[in-house]
Image (cartoon, rainbow, N blue to C red; front, side, top):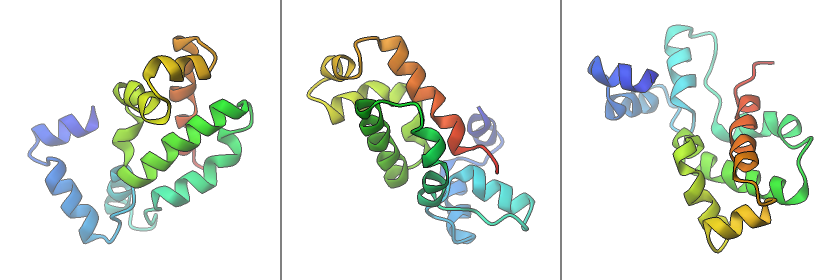
Length: 130
């Protein structure tokens, strides 16, 4: 939603990525970059740092298979960016880790709604401030 509004205002993803490079935060979320631009006392953290800070809280109530899947999702987030956390990516992520989306659903307990909730709920810990 925020990025759509910024795009409408003439600040598309290309300009925002240029801003990320300008403040030497290419491995940070754009949210961190924008926060830094508006409050220079808060340095942007990398996606790797963000994941490391949140891992303990993220994995506390997950079984082994769920943890493996969320670790896979987090590796994609670190590698590619926040777009990998979009709900529309969930089928692709399941297919990428498992043979197919159906296999992923079966491996993770068979309930697509619970898998969707898992995918959404772990993300809150990435952006919780200490």
